[in-house]
Length: 270
Image 1 (cartoon, rainbow, N blue to C red):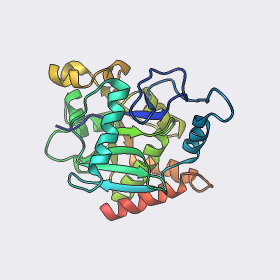
Image 2 (cartoon, helix red, strand yellow; image 1 turned 60 degrees about the vertical axis):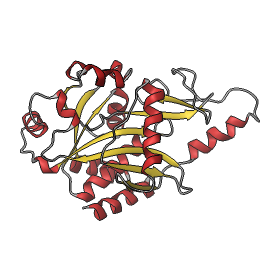
Image 3 (cartoon, one colour; image 1 turned 90 degrees about the vertical axis):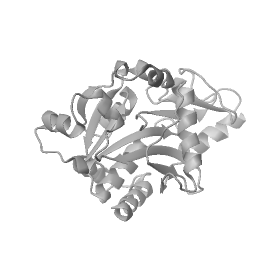
């Protein structure tokens, strides 16, 4: 069984006053990508220790892309990153992961974000539980274009390590899939990630609501509050997304290094 998509954000405690709080052992506050935490401040004295931490997180951006298969060295760290984020954001119990996990790290090696990838094949995708026909047929009907199942990639396990990190995931995902030769990315997501695509100028194709009643009772229970945000099954055209972001990265941008590293990773994976 594959894991569904959407994600969660982890930011230091004291950085957000308008989100449901859940603190881990490392003092991190974890909030959903669909939550209200868009801007944050650190209260207290000028020398408050969290003030320096918040500045560090705002400066730190991912530059390195890794691909972790089921037996890869860093796989366990990536799985725990996803598991902790979903647990804190939705009280979800994530035990199954995409076959490949993409990790986004800073120059110092700090894990900042994770997403999962599954190439569409003969076996059903997780998100096809929400659809009335195979995803390529639904997508073709929605776009009027021929869609080959072999060119589809299901994306999930979205988790980021700072507020606003959805653009990191979109940047790396688009560059990687473009270089790897994929045509469409399909995923389930809530409103915050959909909005992140929109802010970057990337249009999505809406395929269906992600109706939890289509899952068995045990599976629904594992997802905690995830379905409270009313997620939907969406698709992104890789070529169109790449054209939009490539124009942005023609200019100086803090995510240039991530963009180019993801392009190289896609070439190696193709």
